[in-house]
Image (cartoon, rainbow, N blue to C red; front, side):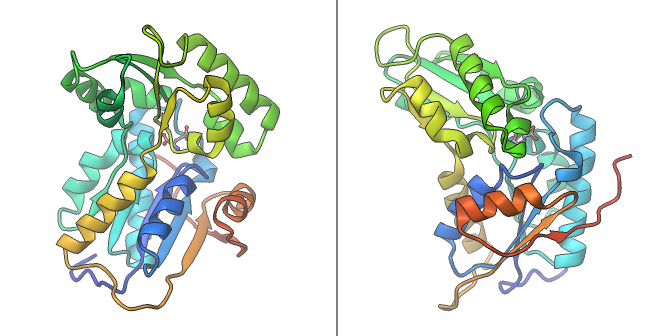
Length: 277
Ligand code: DGL
């Protein structure tokens, strides 16, 4: 594959579904001259309650597809669950390819917290991963973290099921305890799944204005810019980049959400990746 990575080539971005659009939105704002190929693995979503092996195998196949069919010059894993399961394997397989992963932003949240209590909403698979456990261990003593696996929430957002989404957000924030700026309250809420920023307004309403929502989309886009610059792979020129939308399953959710969140009106192409092993 990528013997020669080219600055003019597109950046591949993938997620289990539409969640990665929250990252793509930040990437397009940060890197307006770049072309993007966004791949939703809708046929195999959600990832959050699946095994690490399954998600890891999917991530490898999606990366293969983006490299072989679209000749991407970099990969952004716009999915916490896939990053936890596969970023090491992907980097081992393509050591010269810039690969940017995403993980729940515990560090910035711990630094910003005044109450010392940080909430973390993420998929069960992310919270159970060894990558997440080492991140948590590295922050021992810096804050107390309230971990909330949010089964079903990414799926409800993906399906556009407003009633289920509202019910699950209310249930999970309620289970986490009190939110606010007083002692014993959570004042930083980490959105550890890229689907959750898409319902940021709903979550903010539930936890109140004194708790900050921590969404790593913007830092990830900055990191992507840095990595591309270091590799000499930033695209130059004034022409606005393009975005191609692809899905392994029905493109309906991607089409609807890309229109809503990014103002993209184009149709979604179909991506044929093999079924999982
Ligand atoms: N958006 C994904 C994440 O950041 C995965 C959600 C899912 O498929 O369960 O973890």
